[in-house]
Amino acid sequence: MTLRLRLSLVAAGVVAVVVALACATTYFVMRHELYSQVDGQLAAHATDPTANYPNFSPYSGDYVSFVAPDGSWRGDHIPVDPRIRAVAAGRTHGFFRNASALLSGQPIVLRERVKPYQPGVAVVVARNIDYIGHDLERLRLILILVSLGAIAAAAVGGAVVSGATLAPVRRLTAAAERIAETGEPSERVPEGGHDELAALGASFNTMLATLEESLETQRRFVADASHELRTPLTSLQTNIDVLRGDLELDPDQRRRLLDDLDRESQEMRGLIAGLLELARGGAQVEKEKFQLDELVEDTVERARGRFPAVEWEADRLEPTVVDGYRDRMERAVWNLLENAGKWSGDGGSVEISLAGGELLVRDHGPGFADEDRPLVFDRFYRSAAARAMPGAGLGLAIVREVAEAHGGTVTAENARDGGAVVRLSLNGAARPGSAGHT
Image (cartoon, rainbow, N blue to C red; front, side, top):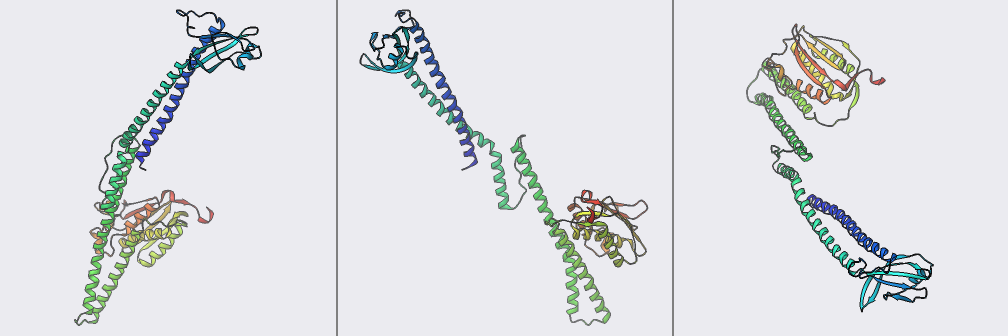
């Protein structure tokens, strides 16, 4: 059953209940009013049963009978039963009732008022109320027809309204189906209005824009990765072909080729590791608490071994607990230190500090060129000066990915007295203290 049909049935059902209650109320109110009018006139007539003037009295056409306790009567012939005799004998009070009678050979329905008249006598005033039955029957027919018409109108109106209301949903469904068929999320649904469905359409378009951007990023990533992998692979293949060829190579040439192969394989390994790190950036990994200050200290010791000619100063490391991904954070910190070590050169120095959930790495190299600074965290971006150095332009891009995975940020700037400063801020993911005492 479609949603439109369900809405139409619900609208018809609600209207049916409301109309049924309204019609039942109308019917019983009218019935009560008709009987109340007749009962009022019969009560007045029973008070003065001899007042019956055909031309001027509202009692014209009433039947009047005086009944004794033994059932004998005087006046109009009205069927007498034990209830009437009991009133005549004074054993019960008066009452109103409907009674069937056969008068002049015709069955009719009488409305009777029975009450004591004199000691030992009851008066019965009756009126033919067949017209009330006919009127109520006609009213029932009218109310039934009105109810059916209202229900039908409600069903049609519900179908029309639900069709118009669900039009945005149908557009969303059609767009989703087309996207599923083509795999291209560039389509948008029309937006308009200020209701919940308009908000749904806007949210759907926002989702499509995000999906489109994600797919475009993925395409660029694959294209860039293919391009970056092609260069070292080509160089590797060329050197391998030379080694496997028929050319006679002296020991120095062979050693240089092998050194090139080793360097290129190392570059390939670093590039693949960076690509894997970026590729798993959105993977769901369980978080853990770890000491960021200890991780930074261990990574600095590793950097001292990798860049022995650089002086590493890491005396200001505030004890800091991070709830996050230790392996990824270690890779990000290493990328920051490696980048600073490469640009410091022999005899240079790098200062590392950690305070307030912010890791600061400052080197005394050439710093960032103005045109490069906005792009240093982009994937595969390498400045003109960096192209002569090993690397694929993924180090700082990985740092940004890790920072965002922890709800933080990373910024790059130049120090006033020369060199580069990179700040990794973890905001709420980091807090002062020791993991063993939190």
